[in-house]
Length: 97
Image (cartoon, rainbow, N blue to C red):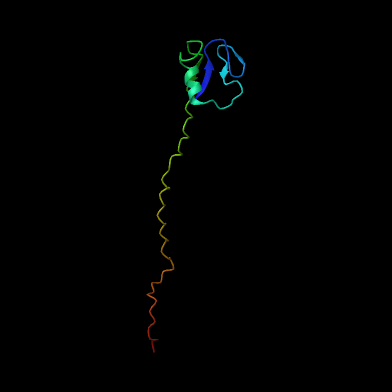
């Protein structure tokens, strides 16, 4: 979560002056959870919240590509019958005498 300053204030730990709307911390360092809790509530020397949490926007989930069904196979075309005129069965017969 990111934090921003709610008012103008000076950080007593590092002396940095924050204006309202400035990001906290100013240098991007890691801040302990207890310190964030103190600064974001009235439990500090100022007696009121100095920072507030800004929820980070959710990253859009990548949309899955729709799975398309394979194209239907075309039936094989029938081969036209031979038009030679002779009907043979392919059987060998004894030669006529």
